[in-house]
Image 1: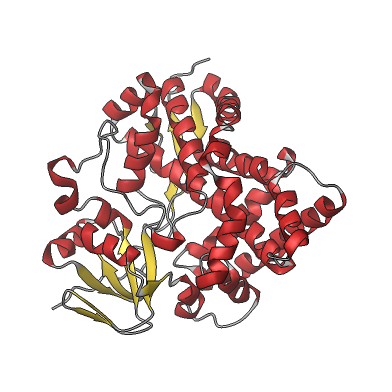
Image 2: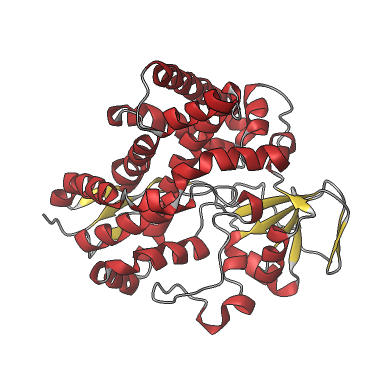
Length: 395
C-alpha cells in the first residue's frame, strides 16, 4: 500500500522521520496534490523530463480558487507560463541576473549586511527576521530594480503578504494576498510610468526599452514580471536566510568554521538549501500519460519533488549526507527548481546569502536561538516569522 503524506496539513513536516520512512519504502507517496517524489535520482529525472511542465498554474485551482485578480495574475507569472512565451520572457529578463552583473554588486551587499549588523551587534540580541533578513532581502531587491532604498518597508510589506501565495493556507489568506497584489502592482505601475518619463540605469528602464523597441514585452507582461520578481526575490531570500541561521546554529562547529573561513559562504548556502530549503517541494504536471518505474501519472497529473527528502537521500549523498559546509561537489539540490523553470534569480540569492552568512558568523560567534521563535508550516514555502537570537555584544 502506498503511503499517504498530508502535505496540506499545516502541522505536517516534510523533513520529518515519517517522510524519511516513506522514502525507504518507495520512491513516491500519495498526497492531496498528487504524488510526492522522495528520492534524489527519480526527482532529478522528473525535473528534466520533457513530458512534464511546471505545474504551478494549477495551484489556485487546487486550493478552490478559480477566478479573481490573484488567480489571473498567478496564471501569467513566469512560474505558470510555458513554451515560447516562457522562453521569451526569460530571455528578456535574463541579462539583469547574469553572474557577472550580480558579482559586481558583492561590495554593496557586504556594506548593507554590515550596516544592518552594526545596529544590533552592541546590544547582544536581535529579532533576526525583522532586523536583518527582511531589510537585507528587501533593500537588495530595491537595489536591483532601481527603487528608492527608503521605500523598502512598503515593498517588503506587500511582498510578505503576497508571499502567502506559496503557502498551504492560501485560500484563507486570499484577501490579504489580493490586497497586497493590488498595492504592489499599483506601486510598480507608477515606477514604470516614472521611468518612461525619466529613464535611469536600472532594470525597469532596461525592460521598458525592450518593450518600446520591438514590442517583445507587452505592458501587462512587464508589470506582472516586475511584481513577481519583487515579491518572489524578497520572500524566498528572507525565508532562506532564517532557515540558514536555524541550521547553522544547530551545528555550532559549522558556525564557528564559517566565521573563520568566509570563503565557505558559497558551500554553506548550498548545504543549507539541500537540508533546509524554503521551497519544500517543486511542482511538475504531466503533459501526457507517463509511466515511471511502476507509477502511472496520467496527463494532467501532479507530482511534487520534495526538496529535503531528495536532498538528504542517502542513495545519492552516501555516507556523508549530514550537514557539512566543507563538502564540495554535492549532487545538485532542487532548492532553485530545475529544468526550464530553474530560478531566474539564483545568482542573486546565492551571492547575497554567501555574503551575509560569514559576516553574521564572524560578528555573532556565540549566537544561539533565544527561544523557539515562530515559524511557517514546514510544507509549501516555509521559513521564520520571528526568530530571536542572543549573543555576546560586540562592536
